[in-house]
Structure formats: C-alpha cells, structure tokens
Length: 503
Ligand code: BLA
Image (cartoon, rainbow, N blue to C red; front, side, top):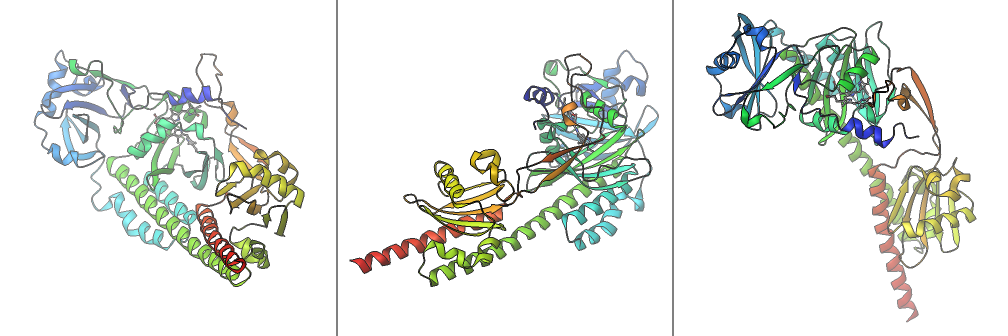
C-alpha cells in the first residue's frame, strides 16, 4: 500500500528548509562578509539584546569589529567552531561561527557554566567507547548509544531510528522515562522525513528544536548585494525548522527534540533522536558531545557491518568451492548440483532449489511443481541475462501466485545464452506484521487550507505484508554470480572434452 500520493510527497519535498529566512528564538545570529566584516544580515531579536537603537546595524558591527579569530581556521572545519565567550549588551554569551558562501555566520547563545572536567565529552571517551568496543551486534551498540544520548541530554525519550531499503524508518533501540510512549519496533513511513531533509542531515549532523511552539525570528538582510539572494542557513544551529515538522512534533506530544545523524559509508543510515514533553535547551559542549556520539556510533556500525559481511562472504566462498569441486569430480552435468542438497540450499540460504535444463527439472527442498517451474523459466527468459532476484515474486510473476508460501523469494542464474539452463533458488513467504506509529495514510489536508498536515494519531496501526521473503543480501548475490562463472567454466570445458572425443 502506498501511504501517500506522489503529489503530497512533492509538497513535503518543497519545504525550503535550507533558506527559511528565520531562526529559532533561543539565540542571536549575524552574517558578516568574511573579508570586510561588513554586516550582511542579522536576526531581528538583536534589538532586544542591544536595546532599541536608530543605528542598530553599526552597533552590531562594532560588537564583532574586534572579534579575534582566523578565517582560515574556520575554513578547515566543515561544522561550526566555538569562538568562546563574549560580553554583549551586559550579558555573557557563547559564540560559535562557520563560513559559507563567503559569509561568516556567527551564532550567540546564553552561556552555560564552563563544564571543565565535567565536560560531557569525557563521559563518552571514558565510559562509552570501551563498552561499544565490547558490543557484539549493531543492536547492542544502538542500545548503548541510546542510553548515552539520553544521559547526555537529559531528555525524556531517546530512539535510535534506522532507515530500511524502502526508506522507511524503524525504531531499533529506545530509552524512555515514565510517562513517555514507547515506539520500540515501530515503523515510520519514509515520507515523515522528506528527501531534502535527509540530504541536509548528511551535511549538518546535529539539530536542536528547543520549543515546537516557538515564534521564528526573521533574519533581516541589510547588504544590497544579498538583497535578493536567499541566505543559505544549512549549517546554522539556530536554523528555523519547517512548520510542517513543528506541527508533527506537537501532534506527537513532543515540545523539544534533537537528533544526530548516523552516517554509514557516506549514506544516512539513521538518526539518534531525543524527545521531551517540555521545551529544552542544550549548551554548546553538550551538542558537540552528542555529535561526537553520533560519529562514534557511525564508525562502530560501519565496522560491525563490514565484519559481518566479510565473514559471510568467506563462508559463502567455501560453500561455492565445495560445490564446484564436487561438480568437477563428476560428469560435470549441471543436474549433479542436486546430489548435495544441503550445500546447494545453504549457498543461497534457500529452502528449495531447482536445476532446469530445457524441459527437464531436478529439484531439492520446497519447490513448485515441474509445470510451474517451466512457466517460471518462460517468464524469466526475457528478463535474465546472468542473474535475477526478487523478494516479491508473486507480485511480479502471475503464474507464481499459487506458490506464494514456498516461493515468495527467487534467485535465478541463467547459465547459457543459447540453451534453457537455469539454477533457481526459492525462499518461503515471511508474513511481516509491521507496526506503524499511526496510519501513515492519514497525512492529509485536514484543515482545508490546501496544505498537507502530518497525521494526528501515532497510536499503533498494524499492516500485514504478504507475498514477501527475506531479502537477498549483496553477499549472497555475489556468491551466486561467482558460482555462475565457475559453472560456465566447467560446462564449457566439458563440452570441449566431448567434442574432442567425438572428433
Ligand atoms: C523532519 N521528520 C523530520 C525529522 C524527523 C521527522 C525526526 C528531523 C527533525 C530533527 O531531526 O529534529 C520525523 N520525528 C520523526 C519521526 C520520529 C520523530 C519519524 O520523532 C520518530 C520517532 N513530515 C510529515 C509530512 C511532511 C513532513 C506529512 O510527516 C511534509 C508535508 C515534513 N519532516 C518534514 C520536513 C522536515 C521533517 C520538511 C525537515 C524539518 C527541518 O529540518 O527543517
């Protein structure tokens, strides 16, 4: 079932999240020309900080005239850098800055105590890192990270949210205080986080929404040169977020949220996301620690996934070699593959396999009847040059609808361009009950204002998925292709030997 129409999704994808023209009200920002330090833009709440003044622009410029730092140092950093504390309008504020498009963006926030030896980052290196190294699985890693993020931020709920192959999110780990709904095991449709947001979260890995009820502070552009260029706020920590998302948070009963990107092999793998029922702030040192936690988790997930893939590949290679050796020792006809049923099945973690040579079939385990196998091969022929795989066969191939239970997954190898020679593996149906957080089809224009609004209910909504098997992993597909290469070699050699005998 398609949760949302493509029209709705296009609306979400158009939210101009990099150029909102406003910031959240828990800080102040200015944009200066990186070379001249001339004022280019500022958030309109500066008058509250410096007092109303007819020459506010000049007074803001003065604040930064003596700011001491090297632009080159900032250029080396792809996020924001701390500039330490500044005294502005009689208040001590923490300043951080980053460069973008030749502009120096400075953000100021109320100062938290100097953390010193209590700095949140120490908790990570002293306690968390050694425990992460001991964790055996990605799930165990995520559980440790969820607990650490919740402890760092003091928020009421922490979820580790990962994206599946379809872009939907699933909650892998959770830490919650009493009074918070649990979402562990729940799925969220991919459309809850539109594509431009996912792109941005790869670049800017940390976000804080301090109060979902906030009133945005407009950013005023004073430089004529920038008058009609939208100011790119991608890397601002105070960036005002999409109103659709703020409505989503309020519907979920979340007034504060913060999230850190989990990036594995350059892709957005998931998010560490914390929520609170009440507005919350996080100081600079805590935010840096959270970002660092995200990096630790990302690296550890990548290492765990790499290790699992490498050991699976080694195991599959051994099985392939054993099968090929066996075939080479025999008369080398492909039907010999079924002589070692468990080897043939294990190589693709299948529960049924068939060798189809023209109109004959040899099978092991759970497979459709011979006539259906022939129909399947008929269907496969125009679609397959070397290999074909699907975890949703009944939806693709009508003759297989009656074999859903044993043949929802298919991996097929075509051995010859000329003859009908196929090796087929089948996987049974795995009925999946998906627990969605709310019915995703209920994102609607509920207010009749021509805009899409996020759903209001996040109560569990169950969906049953049928006609699907477990997915074929890249390792399994790689092993199958390697096996195909070896089989072609054996079959060709055999044909040559026969030709020699005949001549
Ligand atoms: C952004 N949507 C997001 C973000 C999350 C979610 C986590 C990123 C915000 C952040 O990291 O702080 C969704 N929030 C969730 C999910 C959970 C959660 C899945 O707490 C699970 C526990 N969203 C919609 C619809 C639209 C939409 C219908 O539901 C579009 C009309 C848009 N979501 C939307 C947009 C953003 C977003 C535009 C980007 C917000 C921004 O960064 O400005």
